[in-house]
Amino acid sequence: MRLGVIDIGSNTVHLLVMDARHGVRPVAQASDKTTVRLMRYLQPDGSISAEGVTALTQAVARAAEVGRTHRTEATMALATSALREAANGPEVLAALEERAGVPIEVLSGNDEARLTFLAARRWYGWGAGRLLLLDIGGGSLEIATGVDEVPDVALSVPLGAGRMTREFLFDDDPPKADDVERLRAHAREVLRPAVGPVLDAPAPDHVVATSKTFRSLARLAGMPRDVLGADQRWRMLRAHLEDWEPRLARLSSVDRTVLPGIGPGRALQIVAGAVVAEEAMRALDVDEVEICPWALREGAILQHLDRL
Image (cartoon, rainbow, N blue to C red; front, side, top):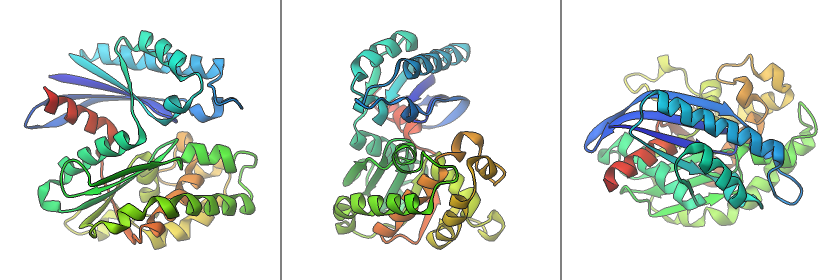
C-alpha cells in the first residue's frame, strides 16, 4: 500500500510517501519539504503568531495536496515540540487538521525518540546489537538506547538547533564568540543530569545519528566515502566536528551555504546544531557516530504497518 506521513516539525513541514507492506522493506516514492522555521514565529507568551499559523497551514495544505497527487491510500500526520509547547497549540492544531484532512498526532519527546529508534533498529537489523541513537530536531534533541525495537531508555531535552539559535545566536550573523560559549555552557548544563540513565546502560555496539542536522554536519566534517572501505555509511568523528564548529561560527549564514551539505534552509541554525551535537557526543563519551538515513517519518510508517 502507498502510505504518506506529514511531519510538522519546528523547522520544516515534510511529507514522505512510501510503498510499504508488512514484512517488506518500505520504498520511498516521493518527498516534499517546506521550510517554515517555526521558532521565529514564537511570541513572548509562547504562542505562535498569526503569520506563523498562516505559514504552517499553507505548508500543511501543500503536503496534503502532494500526497493526494501521489495517490496515498492512508496518510498520518505528526507534530513535534513546537506545537506541543505552543500556548495556542490546540487552536493551531485544529486549523492544521482541517488543511491536512486527517487527525494530527502530537508526539511527546519520548515518543519521538522511540519512533526514531524503531526506524534505526529496522535499518540496522538485529545483528547490530545495542544501538545508541542521537537525533537533533528544530526544537529538541532525542536520545535513546537499547537492544530491542523499543529502547530501554528514551529521552528528549529542549536543545533543538532552531530553538538554540533563537535563544542564543539570533542577534548577530555571524554570532559572537561569547554567545556561542553561552550556548555551549547551557547545553552542558542541560545534558549533564539528563544523560545519566543512558550512561548507566550497557555500552552500545553502534552509535547512530539521524536528522538533517547530523547529515549536514557529517557531509561537512565526516570521513570521505573513499576512506570507508566496504562500509559506505557516513561517519563523523567528534574530533572532526570540534575542528569545524569554530570555523562555521566565524562565517555568516550566507557564506556557510557554499560549504558541502549546508543549504540555505540549514545555514542559519547549523552552528547551534554543531554545538549541540558536539556537546551531546561529549556528554555521552562518544567519539564517532554513524549516519542512519531512516528517522521519525520512517518509524511512523513502520509502526503503522505493525499495528495493521
